[in-house]
Structure formats: C-alpha cells, structure tokens
Image (cartoon, rainbow, N blue to C red):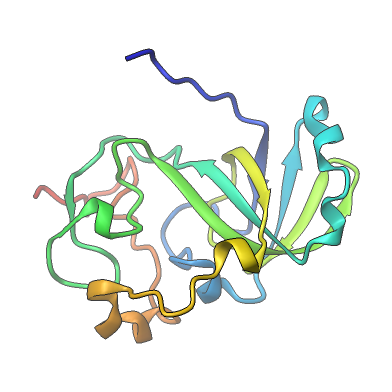
Length: 169
C-alpha cells in the first residue's frame, strides 16, 4: 500500500504545556480557551467558518512515541483494545476534538472547551453539524459505567514520550 503523509495546516495553542493535567475530552475542558493558528497558505479555507458554533479539530498526537494495541484508558482500570478507547497511543496517533468556535480573527480561531496540549500540529478542521454528527440512541460500550468520571479525569502523562508511567502491556 502507498505511504500516507499529512502536512500540518496549523498549530494549536492552549494553556497546557505538557500532557499532565490536560482534560481528557472537550466536555471536561469546559470554558478553557485556546487559539488555533492556521498557516497563511490555508487561510482562504477559513471562509464562512464563523457561521458555525462548533468545529472538529483533527490533529497529530506529537508527544506519543509508540503505539499500543492494548491500553488502560484514563477512566478505567482494565486493559482495553485501543480501538475501543480514545487513548492517544494509537497506530496512527490522530486525535479529534469538537470545540466551541468563539471567533475567527484572520488566521486565528479562538476556541473554547479545549483538551489539547500546546503546540499540537493541526491536520484538518471540519464544521460540526448535529444532523451529520449526532447519533440518537448511540451506545458507548464499557464507558457506560465510567462516563461519570469524565469531569474529574485528567491526563497523567502515561502515553507521552517522556513519561515514566508508560504502560507495558
């Protein structure tokens, strides 16, 4: 198969200088602000984005140094398959976050409810459209019993490149 290569289109700026303490999903980062800096050659692509209240950020987990097919997720104590989690230590370390779009200012998108480490490379932006993205009656598997932990769950650095907490599963 042909190799797939992506080029970042921008950089995500947040108050989180390391993975430790980062909310593990956007709802847990409620009210936390950040700025998405889109590189100048992609600014034309931001036309009409200001009409959306939320956007989907697709980014590269740049601090991950190895993938794991089995992980212990942040809100659980059991070993799970990585594809049944949102853990960052994936074969392709790609993250997604739905954030509130506060305003568009030139090449800068001011966002809220952020759960991303400062300096993260941005791969793409998509508008959040409830009719496309919301699925009534969706099931959440093993998370059903754990989802109440979301607000207090934070990244402890276990998946980042400099962590002593990295799992050997």
